[in-house]
Image (cartoon, rainbow, N blue to C red; front, side, top):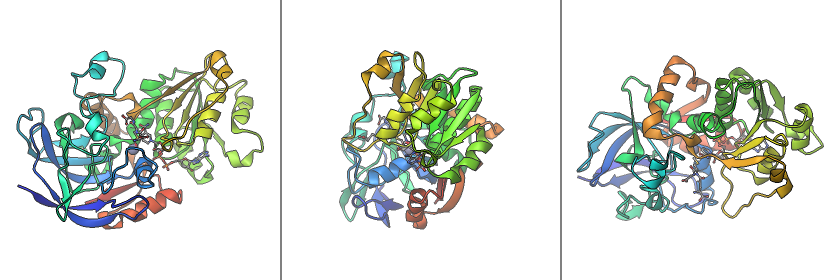
Length: 371
Ligand code: NAD
Ligand code: AHE
Ligand code: ZN
């Protein structure tokens, strides 16, 4: 039976989200209806809303950092049951595709093609408004009280985990930590530079601390971010605005030739170049996490790579959600991953546009929306 759901709909690029009641069709075979309890707002939501995402389709329901409870399951769903607590995954884990079986990546291909078009795997959408289709987003659409996801796009987590906090493990916090531990595999004693201290960069600091990095250089043009970075374990703080010379030169001078690892957590291609070029000659590795606008390209002198620097990228921290998220939830329970530090604001769905404003003004780390 089709149900009504309160949702924040993005009717077009650069328009404020509108809170309306959408229709949600029941889950089809292999799909699951989830009641979202809480969702974070990630910069990627703002990026897509800005119209710069080549995969952005409107009208759509954004949101991909949620926590919820299974409300109904479609035919053939075996791994989840009504009442299970779940975290939606924009990187599915089917366990059966070439990617999942490779053991080399978390980039599952099971539902990725239709997901990028705002559709469910059968090529249709479960959302509609006034009889017109409303598209899904990143396979999650957590800015809706009820949403439908493929079974392979849901990680089951313990019932005791507070959904209004562990929702942040659906993207930002896991991405930053995973990029350091899984993608870059930062070694004990390594020097690390982190560009951008939003939810992703601050989580990368936690990852660097977990990896026992010797020096964690936190870089942001907003100095208000430095206190939290220090609290999480950063050892050095650099505001590029305080320096006349290129920021890579500043970091190279500070570190006797460059860092062992750098992470770009902003989505700015000039900063991606700086992050690569502050990596140490011969072995320094730079990991891109930030999402750059459609059509943007990175550049550097090939000599930077010839002389031993490595450039790589990370999606969802290289984490296989269904298998690995429960361990992240456990680390949040023990305090090793301090989720409270990230939650600077909480509000109801009606106020969601304010969450975007706070992000753009640099005043929030994560706003958690409660339904
Ligand atoms: P955010 O807006 O919370 O934080 C961005 C930070 O970058 C801010 O503190 C801002 O002051 C800082 N910044 C902006 N310009 C800068 C500059 N020139 N130099 C230094 N710092 C600068 O964003 P977020 O939610 O942390 O996301 C960060 C990026 O990561 C976005 O591009 C987002 O789309 C991307 N992201 C990627 C993945 C992935 O899997 N690869 C996952 C989540 C987010
Ligand atoms: N749709 C964009 C790509 C956006 C992108 O790179 N997304 C990241 C996750 S951002 C989460 O906040 C990602 O995981 N990418 C891998 C994937 O499969 O999408 C575009 O540029 O077209
Ligand atoms: Zn995100």
